[in-house]
Image 1 (spheres, rainbow, N blue to C red):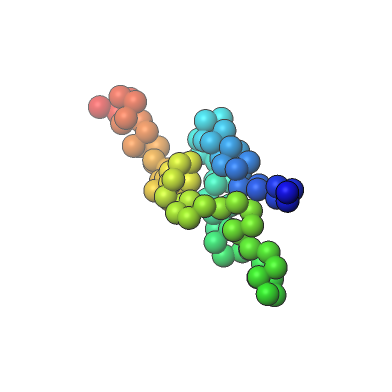
Image 2 (cartoon, one colour; image 1 turned 60 degrees about the vertical axis):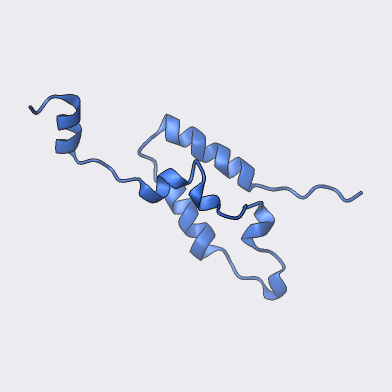
Length: 87
């Protein structure tokens, strides 16, 4: 029986979910997505890839990452209007 390989993507998902609750304005998820997509080093012969981290097909379209794709910060005016201050 082969030992299980560590799959850190599961823990990255947990951290993103916690951050979305604790600090909704955090950009950590957006920055991590950028690193996984474009900043992950290319190893010769495919020795190591993002798939070795446990990424699943279509990971960007699933929670908690989907929120990061479409996330847009409201302006102060929009926030004030939504709260009923500016009516």
